[in-house]
Amino acid sequence: MRHLLLALPFALLPLVAAQAHEHGHDHDHEHSHDSLGAHEHGVASLNAALDGNLLELQFESPAMNLVGFEHAAKSDADKAKVAAAKRELEQPISLFALTSGDCKATQVELQSPLFGDADHDHDHDHDHDHDHDHDHDHHDHEGEHSDIHAHYRFECAKANELKQLNLAELFKRFPATEKIQVQLIGPNGQQGVELTPAQPRLSF
Image (cartoon, rainbow, N blue to C red; front, side, top):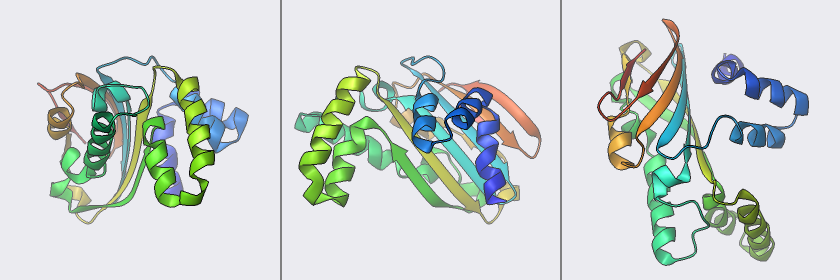
């Protein structure tokens, strides 16, 4: 079931799936996923799949929407903005209003060039110099188009009570996000919709 669920969101993205199969490598898959669609400020995407009591969400946004810039955070003020955004993204239950289904986040993965230094420093202090050089090159390669990816997996004890996704809190906490393009697979099949601060809800 878990394997099936992991495949569900990517069924929405045949282009990515095809590229991933061609490369056959997770690292290449990440890069092909980065290139999917236009990098448009104010616009983010969310893929959601509900299967039984398991819910998967994949959220992707230009860093500009979440932290207000896309360059490497060098000043204390920029680093504080990145840390604050990361803390918000680490609280998906409130961001996506999942309280009604008695859901617990069993997996939270955040990926972005902007998070690189903090993660490496925390996990591998002795490799700081090497990682710093790598990250520096990576930022140069990324240029001014840095994205933030978030992948969440939830187990919902009362999944039958999950009636909708409500992104009002996400829009509130990240006001530079003007619209989110959602692809959802749930009990009623597949649907796609564009959510905005004025219309932040999508029923399963």
